[in-house]
Image (tube, rainbow, N blue to C red; front, top):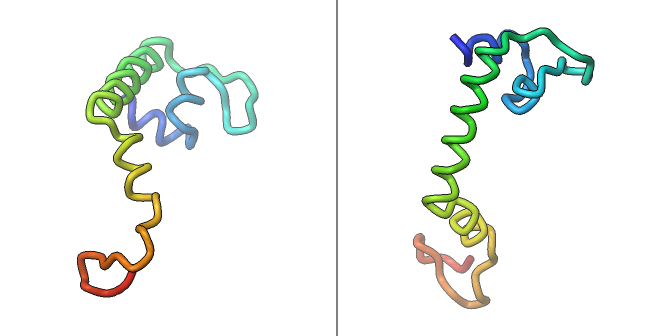
Length: 76
């Protein structure tokens, strides 16, 4: 139900938690639902940290050394 309310509000999770509308104006979202979203989002961030998501993304974004072939056998 909390995710549905965030979707209906058409705002990011953090904006919903902050009790703000799209334009930044104060909103009147349910305190309980904002608490659920806050807890869920905290759990998600903690899991990202646990698995090292930032390191994984940075590794994929770093360019390959010149002359090294990728998985397809073609120059990267």
